[in-house]
Image (tube, one colour):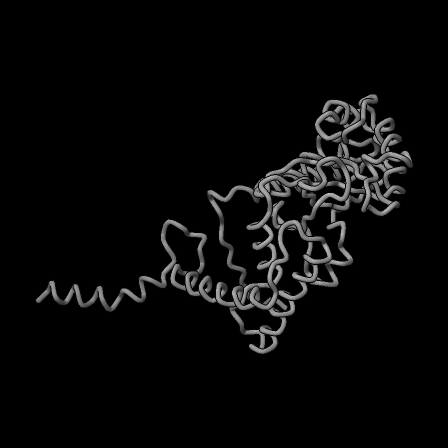
Length: 304
């Protein structure tokens, strides 16, 4: 009788156990059952949206991919309104990012572009930045450059009006290509882009990076930005060059300050240097997922 009672109790508790977060994943605040249900729902929505908005293909143009993004995003917006903002549908931009990654070629080229006027004003005054640039230029220099490993020399070469390496067909005449980085489609953007800034000695000049075709992309989906994985970003065939037909680029617009704002620059006081270090340490700490913490924010007593 006791055994039957225990078995009966276990049967009664099975639904509850299924909805509990696994003890080995203390950071998981949902349950495996709830996650599975959300995945099934997301899959249903995705199939419906793709049926009316088929992916145009990996080699399609930026215009075709923006049209695809807009169609999927509109489906999400409609579902959001119809459900009175209570839907379990995935974000339209997340669906598009996933599809882009799935269909991307294994090799992509992150093409760093910059406004000509900003490039002309940018200078490397710090000796450490100059040394870093000289040591790593060979890794990032565009094909055809055979000059000295100096910032001013490389910059002058990039700005030459007839330079097809830095001003290929299809790029606005007010912009130039600063570098082109070969990547795997599964590479993380931060792990690719940040080392580039550091090695080229321009991390202290860095302001922000945005998709090159930002205006067109924002018109399709106002929330679209630089994605976490290289292959989740908008890619399309290069418009010129010997390998243009089979070469897929991910163009990124880089914005630099004229002079370095890093803690190592002249004129930076101890307080600013300490703050810069805190930011760097905090960023490094976010990558530690082996001992993730969960915080519960509660109001203080008698607080206004």
